[in-house]
Image (cartoon, rainbow over all chains, first blue to last red; front, top):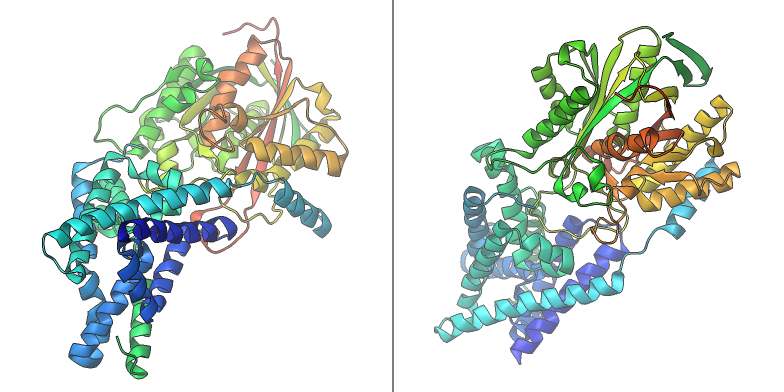
Length: 116
Length: 149
Length: 344
């Protein structure tokens, strides 16, 4: 069932973002920031965790999932290290994705040319 | 130019402007966004089958998705996917990767340091900055009010 | 030939003894596949892979200038002044090409109105007894403009129905006091008009009022109506901008321009088939459409008179981010076919 809900929830989040893009004057960059911030706020509640249990990648692959990952990481780090976890937790949890994007970005810049 | 002429003109612009194909955009966003999430779910399922815990499987899943996105961006396919799917392709983590890979490729001519290196974060930077800021505040609130994780 | 210039209205001048001897046009693949494709001199495809879009833009401009001179049977030393511009910061394309030809150069910027700005200023200088041969040109390159004004090429994003597609095109025309197939009759220098439009994805609505203002002033100064022309071409209003210009002419001036008014950006591409939404834009668009299609209509297509009024949106990415509205300008040039004049 997770496979079905992954599609539906992932798609639904993108529909919400598209609504924001088409019905307001926000640029795509603004919409993405809105959603990552919304994900961080929702990530602070138990509900987003429940959504992840239920919809799997549907809740973690779209950008709100990134905000959720940051908040979850902070929560974990704070539990282990106290206040300093506020500074280290978020990026530790998201490190894999960010580092992958940096490395693959550099690699692609060396290998490919923009072709349009 | 009188104030009323300007106001009248702005009214014409608003009423005559060609409409965005919103209904089609929404359907496309749902299908493309859903499909990318589904691919993520399948990759995660493979890692789960390898014996990783759901907690541990999310990082390698993200890395594989980002790798695929970088490849598609390099081949010049991802921008076409976004043209079709709009936010359906921009909102998933693959869109985030596209936003880092595309400027890095583009600014190769300006050199590896000030071109590729500096431009890597031009589009993704705001998301990282505000994501981190929001997560910090949420984490702080939870710490102060002692909300359980 | 007597050269003469006379002020006929605010910013409007009648000129005598100024001719367009020949024009050279170079366009990209997409432009060549459009409905006007066969009117252009050269279809240019990017060569080596190590080149930048900015270099490609320079090649486009240089080729168009060389073709224009070759068609006019002139060599570089005969050119007394080069006028023109492009869309890139600090006008690098025009200036860098100037390094190769080494002729006296005045760089100009009026965004997509650059070509008629160069034609207008060149005509005034020639008519006033200044240089006898002036080369006027403008160029734009889709991807060079895109990375400067919008997003990196491979970054995905959706386009809006009002977005225009910056043309990869260059056009150069030789203005001279020696008789040629097209005569310049009059010019009107535009003034900045801003009706408060702010959407950087919709230049057409920002520029339409400037186009109407300049065309109206030009016609009034000459004591003409739109019926005195075979066609009036604006530059880069696109489909939506043209509709707004027609509406403005109808409502504010009580004139019906439908039969005469068209737009360079609207005709360069097949709007449906080529997926360019509102049409073409870019400094090179009106330059190439004039040098290829419109000048052909004047020399061989039976048109007698053309009014070319290219429009420019004078914003920068910075002002757009700061939420400023988009000031616009249009410069107009009246052109007449010289029948019996030796087609060179």
